[in-house]
Image (cartoon, rainbow, N blue to C red; front, side):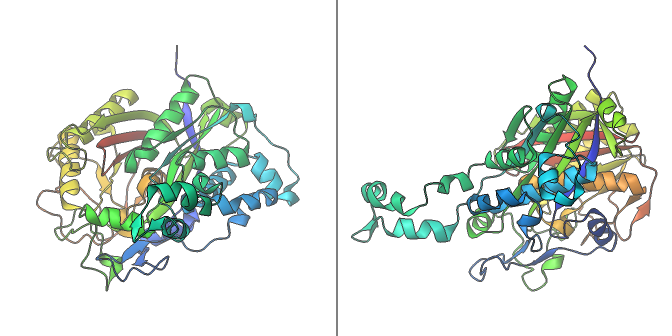
Amino acid sequence: MNKRRVVITGLGLATPLGCELEAIWTALLEKRSGIRRITAFDPAGFRSQIGGEVPPFNLGDFIPKGYRKSIKIMSRDIQLALVASYLAVKDAGLVTKCVVERDEAAGRPVNMDPARFGANIGAGLICADINELAGALHSAVENGEFSITKWGREGMNNLTPLWLLKFLPNMLACHVTIVHDAQAPSNTITCGEASSHLAIGEACRIIERGDADVCIGGGAESKMNPMGLIRQDLFDRLARTHNDHPENACRPFDCDHCGTAASEGAGLIILEEFQHAQKRGAKIYGEVVGFGAGTNTTSWKEPDPDGHPIAQAVEKALNDAGLRASDIDLVVTFGSGIPAFDEGESAGLNRVFGSGAAKPLCMALKGALGNNGAGSGAIDLALGLLAMKHNTIPAACNVEKLADQCRIPLVTGRAVDARIQHVLAVSYALSGGQTAALVVRKI
């Protein structure tokens, strides 16, 4: 059976550099960073006090008026996903239930079959609201110690009955599919920073085999909370020496890389069967032609220094696309800024592309955006598509001299013009070992 072709027709982003595509793109070209001192809570007691926070937004602007009562049971991660989903749908020119009910003045009917609209959304480990949890825990203390008996009898009663619904990873996809009335297959991927790529890859498979005509894919996550930040710090992943100048903290592949910057963000894209997109006259950013995944079998929390899992995912994506390594014009790296992970990623890319001068140019975004968790991959892919659209590769922030073990053709200094036909985007999970790669072709 021939696979149906899958194209990308809409992009929706919520990042520390804002939520408007062209504004984010301009900021990248100007090498502006969205990393600041954390304001969501007081970070004074943390060794790393910086992060990437999405600028304030009114969620009511992105969901139907009648759905706003549900905001009280939405975590930050859910809210970011809803913002990105609305922007992606609007960018694609789709009219969903959300668009009709939100944009009442538009007066347009839904222009797609809800039963053929699916979703695959990556999510992280959503951290509980400490303020909500603390009161309930306090009521379970007996003689100065936590009592599981008292917790069951009294403590849990001090949580709202719907409390858990804020923190289940699948609630991102639940709310997105409800507001947009997406009734085709839906799934949630929870594989750390690789979640977006894996979700997009699965969404493509759903369309290829004919189970949907349109899917929304990507991911969202916020690490801008005490539990999210301390978890990354305990793993020694965060930059701790740049609290006074946070915009310079995350330095992917640089000789002074010293850790990543925790962040938040969402990236959701509209994937659509090619003829379906053509029929409605949709603009097309590119065609997804390759998807591959791999796993680090050496450690669940440390990268393979030889880069085998990265190379495995890339080679599978190239084989799926029917392309050679020399066909790739741009690699959107993950570039965490964590030395061991940067070195492992570089080793994996060099395994595939060799060490010659013909290697594709690379771009790195974490210096400007930080580590957006489960949202990272889709954000990276979307910005890679904008690079292909503009035939321009923005320079990486905070990279002055490549580390000796990170010899890749990374664009630094200033943006460069380039003819881009094929984009490869790479991602990996800092914990768990999953890797993934996607190849997109300009059409």
